[in-house]
Image 1 (tube, rainbow, N blue to C red):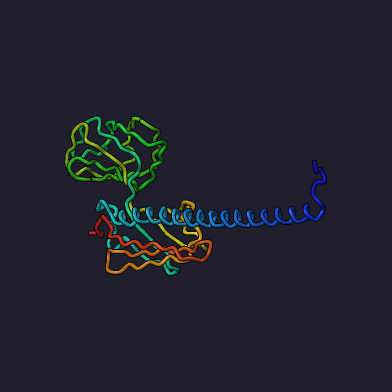
Image 2 (cartoon, rainbow, N blue to C red; image 1 turned 60 degrees about the horizontal axis):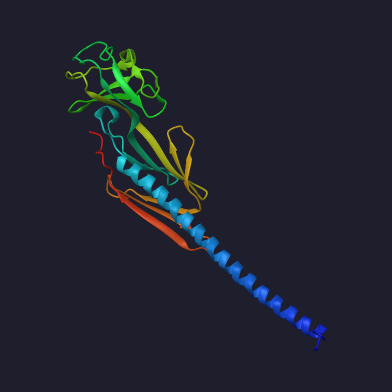
Length: 252
């Protein structure tokens, strides 16, 4: 029986072949991982653009005014800033709802000194200028003269002490009420490659990154054409275009 084994040359050739095969396999795996990484980046890029487009679509549809008391004469619902910003002015519905616990008569000096039962989605702080809407057939508003803090499912007592105005007609027990913040200002701005949405004085929120262009064409009022464009990891172009008409009308 021959037990001579393999020569050194045969071992060297085998080792070289194994190294070549391993190098090829590693190169193939590296290419696969690179392709997968670029694909995931493109998917995340498109997802960010879609998320921004959905939020922008909602803002554009809500642009305008829902009650006359929130519409100063000549105030546009949509405007474009000098640096290409999109400025949207809307009436924001505050996440507080409730109903009257007692009839609300016309001309009462303190219209809601009677109780109003309220429910809030978490802790909510209403500010001066917010409007309490009585939704009994038509939206009719009373302005808050001072701040008001609400806890979830809180029953408001003496809420009339911070209200101004009169109710033009009587409302019965159980009439639904809600709150609205008139002239809520939303600014969309491209800061470097970040698309930022800023509400009033709040800190801006980044909706999408790697944005290469943010173009706004207000066109014939009140329509708006907005184009979002981003660049992928390999320089490919990814763009979304929105055309929206605000749901709410212009100020009377």
